[in-house]
Length: 102
Image (tube, rainbow, N blue to C red; front, top):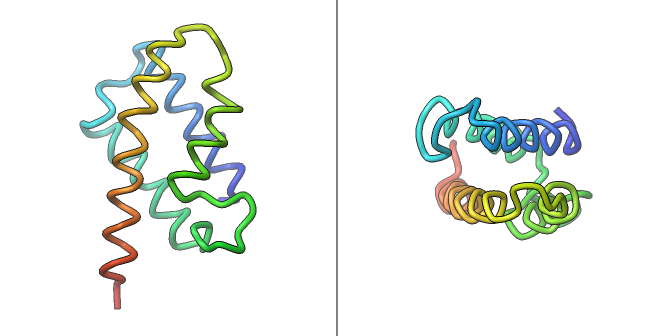
């Protein structure tokens, strides 16, 4: 997947959560689906400094603020969901940076 496809899919998952189609972000299958996006992004090198757009947690936060959080509908729910997503994304990145496979 390209960076934009990963972002689009993530936005779709977040929107599904807002519409109560998906369960809690911290539980499977929702968490597993998001982790698969993370793993695909990481393996594709989208966390490298040279990657544009980068998909590290800070860059992802900036992207989602523009593409998803800017929508005022369900604003508080969106902020809360983003506050749950970003720590997971950071933890996964830390783990994969610290202990690469191989």
